Amino acid sequence: MPRNIRQIIKDTIETGALDYGILNPEQARKFIQQTFDATNLRPLIRHEMRTARTGEIDKLGINSRILRSKVENTDDGYRAGVTTDVLQYATTPVRLPWEITEETLRENIEGQQLETIITNYMTTQLGIDMEDLDLNGDTETDAADEDYDFLKINDGWVKQLAAGSHIVDRSAVDGGAMSLDVFYSAIKELPNKYNNGKLKWVMSPHRYQDWIYTLLNSAVSNGGIITDGRIEDPCAIEVVQCANLSNDKIILTDPKNLIEVSTYNMMIRKTTEGMHAIMEDKRFYVVHLDYDPIIEELDAACLITGLAEI
Image 1 (cartoon, rainbow, N blue to C red):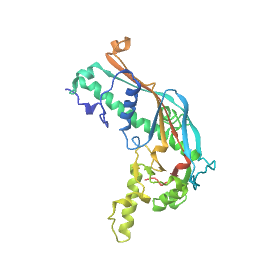
Image 2: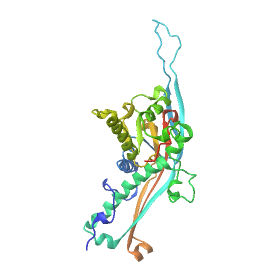
Image 3: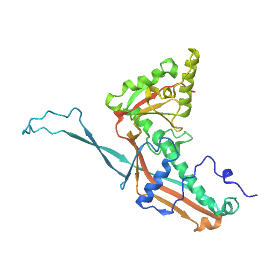
Image 4: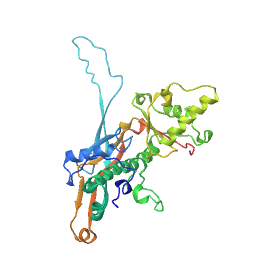
């Protein structure tokens, strides 16, 4: 009986056809953009494409209160200053290999379109995995961890934030229970210059649902109801639900402060030739790319930790 594609690949989203082989810069950019559609957070972050695997990204800044009074026909020599700095990046080469038997291609109701469909599904999963690594990567992961081979690839944003951003630890406050104070304590940690309307709360779906439950339970306990949906966004800051972030943490930052650096040295390769392909009657595929998650300004982010398990 022909097999349905849903029995072969699950939990996927189609993102369009891909070319095979070495991608030119425009194709590489398009491919990365396709991976962005896989999650809620990835479309919001900043992405930088570079030619070199390691290097620097320029960071420019302008001081505040730079306006001065004017005296007619006079140049007092004052010039507003521009601050410059650089962000270091070092991309890690990664790959996503898979294979499909010729029998699978023949014996399914999708016909020859199955090859393209599976490739698109792999692209989507690549986007999900890249976000997971962006957040949770840790080169010091214990070798006994079942996800060691995955998590050890790089150091993600959570580890970087824990090492250098503002930290709010709620573990000793009501056992890490959800409350409005959780959010206001984080807001107070950020300098005012970053509280500019671009901030977002990044939290897991379960954490967000726990927050909604807290709101509803509080309203019911006090004999009222919630009529304004805006209160669901704590401190009037929008929530981005991110399934790859653990339930015990919340990130407060402008998503553009989170950067994923990739290189144009990207390849999607396929072969139906060679001893293994012939003897096993298979097609082999692999995606090669280099990337690194970095943060532009650690001072512009706050990491909430120690929240109670849900």
